[in-house]
Amino acid sequence: MEAVHRRPDPPLTARIGPILLLHGVALAVVVVSELIGTRSFKLGPGLVLFLPLLYAYVMGLAVNPEITPVARRLLSSRSTRVAAGYIVVAAFPIVAKLGTVIGPALKDIIAAGPALLFQELGNLGTIVLAFPVAVFLLKMGREAIGATFSVARESSLLIIAEKYGLDSREGHGVMGVYISGTLFGTIVFAFLGGWMGSLGWLSVEALAMACGVGSSSMMAACAGSIAEVAPASKDEILALAGASNLLTVGTGLYAALLLALPAVERWYGAVEKRRTRGDRAQREGASS
Image: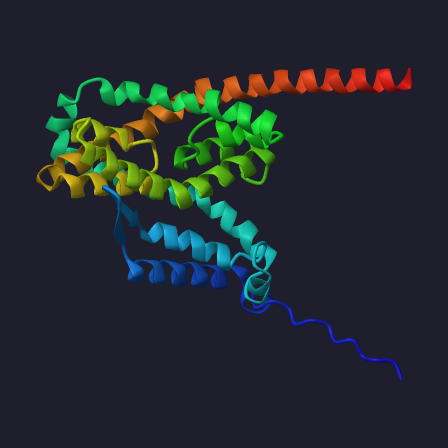
């Protein structure tokens, strides 16, 4: 008698709907992350902050069916495709919230002068530093375009999503750096902010403006650690960091779209042409 092969039970999403369950899991992750709250500890002269966003990313990886096999009993691969479409929508409230700290400190922001506007030029350095590593050392393909044209924050996601789509190779590159930056960037920024602030080499105002690289999580961790070092200037530090971050999002959007992304595309195109000529020469040499 032949054995009866029982078909595996379908994931829960097939029975109650992927959208409803996906939102339920996301809500649970948010609630748990907020209940944990912000945790901090001293590391040398600096203060390291763990923000709820960090916990949310770790738990998000744990319930991702593409990463954790056990999570496939709860969510299907379709859920990950649905979730990817919400990233762009979720980025808008984050950017809008940054503007709420600008009004009360407008006088201090104007007094900071053009430094806030010209700091965006420094973000273009990611091309010079990261692109050769991505292409020549890590042998990345078109993922290198999305990964290296900016610091890969919210505005960068919007640019890549609009031009290529987040399911493209360029989208995979920018998402990889975005997630890595959230997981590790907040820790690095929190430590550097408190550490540099405790050394006294630079003013806390300058350090606060340096916190604004276009990432709300990095900015919050950096400004929070500086404020711990100089509590008397806490309001000014948070205002300058928020203004810097908001201006970086605004100016960085155009700098990345009009300058950085075209430059990286042309550079990658030149590299691909050279690779193609090299491969052709090798084949011709082998055939002869």
